[in-house]
Length: 147
Image (cartoon, rainbow, N blue to C red):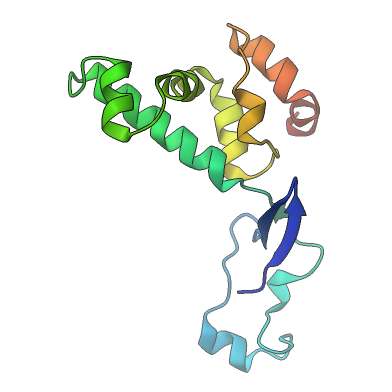
């Protein structure tokens, strides 16, 4: 699968092209037969294809946050302190990560789909209480494109 590696704030970011909605990447047998392929790369993967900028660190933090919240809600763990000890992380970090469960659903969707580029440090600050204010702060251009 073709990909691009770029540097973002002293880290390497893997950028993969996203297929158009409703399309699928060709199977390896189709790639070999297709006249539009060049060196094994299919035409669906052209430079005009949309690009995904999913940040692995924030996706991992979101997964942790929702898992930890589930543990608290179901009684598997009795406190954030117990979770922090079990996960061998700082209690302060666990509290900040748990705040990610309070993000607006459209922000979480933008992060997971890769349509908005964020770093984890961006969300470690205090968050606005309402989802509308979060969207204003984090997705000002994203809302204009979605309408």
